[in-house]
Length: 101
Image 1 (tube, helix red, strand yellow):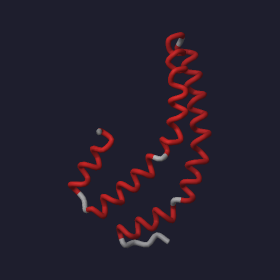
Image 2 (image 1 turned 180 degrees about the horizontal axis):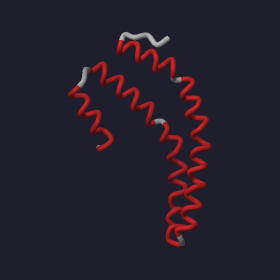
Image 3 (image 1 turned 60 degrees about the vertical axis):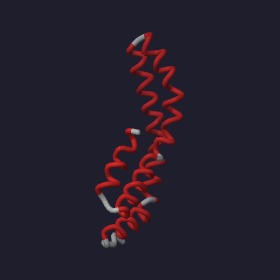
Image 4 (image 1 turned 120 degrees about the horizontal axis):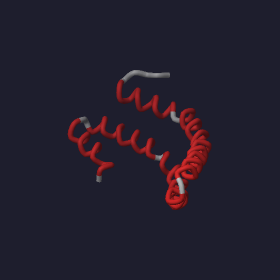
């Protein structure tokens, strides 16, 4: 429910058209968690077990997980940045009337 509070509030404050753009942008931004979530779910039990045994091992393993997530996300974000410009440009020009091309 908390993840939807922004949408509930905005639906009352902005026009339906602007709300639609917000929901689309929000949905696109949330897609990154589809990539990260399996790694986090797979590593959480190991992180918990390591935490019980010692902070030094935990820190080392946590940094390895962070590096793995960075390695996975870098190409995803680079391709997103390159391929989403036409879509974002179109949405921006529709909502503001200003053409970015």
